[in-house]
Length: 387
Image (cartoon, rainbow, N blue to C red):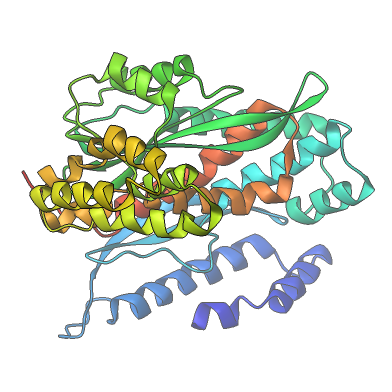
């Protein structure tokens, strides 16, 4: 795109050199350059110039939004173009600024916690563009924490579907490296768009952590839930019985197939049994699924009795999606969507590997989720929520 060519790093570096030599005042130049580039980007995305009348137009201009961008040369006061009818964010601005700041702080905290090497200091300076002190890290962390806390505590509204899932990160705690449970909740609102509802960190995924997490979302206004989708976890199931006992629960079919493999009589049958369970829930309706389940039990009763006993006990936990329109089935019978979100989180947390403390982990993960949340609410609907 035009903006990528004009914002060549060598050009910016040259302008920076001129500014350092006192030949030009860099900030006004960069502000004007970036503001014009963002306008050009918007025109390219929309497919029309400002006020141009054309049938090829994909969206409309919708004013500007003030934004302060911190750079090595100082603050830039920018006017970010807004659109209506089409998603747009200028490529010359970093889409994940919040999560990048959190990542920089996490690496910096590693250095100041004494758990890194000279190379970490070099990385910190490269990431942040300058050598920073522990005092600056604390100040920047406080500013970012305040922003992220507002995101975690914001009011909620009606959510038709909620997905609950957890993954683990490594964290230093009292001189030891421990597993930190990261609880996440994603909801589908009345418009069919996804929202990150909450995130919480704890050294345990026990019932008390899940119950506190769910009750905190309810206190923020979560209501109207018609279905909960999650994996089978004893602590989570107990928390749901306590906090949302009347809401139907859908056990993730993907994890259900994985769990079934543990009841195979030998390794060679694991794949076969997982596929058998998957085939049951591919039925076109509830009656067909029940018929297939009985057929599977008759087929495996003689050679995999433990699997048959397990299937009879757990079969009904995967049926809730049949009470919803068929168009929704694929997206409400697994937590695959949240698993993909976990991959995005781990792409950032893998840089840190072991967090210096729980606060650092919560900051970075919340920042990644907040960026993703903004993408979702400004984008297309995830599914059509039907009564």
